[in-house]
Image (cartoon, rainbow, N blue to C red; front, side, top):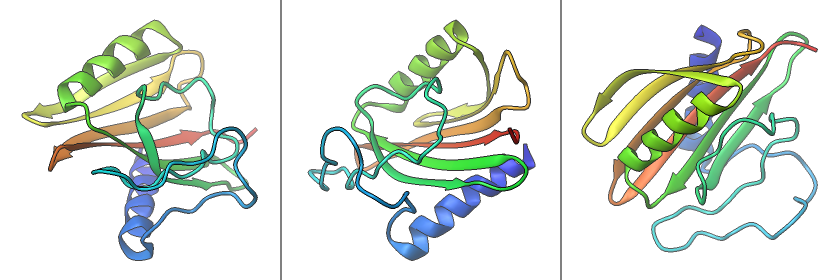
Length: 150
């Protein structure tokens, strides 16, 4: 799980210092990415190779994303934004992950924030962290994920 924390720290550092997110080269497929609007930051493309079955909060905007492939495990750091409250985000992940190939354990919850760890049921080497907090009406959902080498 230490690698998950490192991936999340790298994502946060790149967002803090770089003012943006690392993304794969080339143009995204599908619909155009949303520009910054209202309280939400601009949308970035989903990194190549991110597992398609990882639950993503509906309607949330991906605002920072980075993949860290290596000869060993691959790490991802992601940030989504939504105008929904943290309680609704937490309820979604608690319900959705329990129905799929995931388990989730909430480590800490407080008013307007939560943190959790999650693992794939079919391969516990696939693991991540999930943190959410709200400020100025925007809820941020931070996820780090580690997958084993192929």
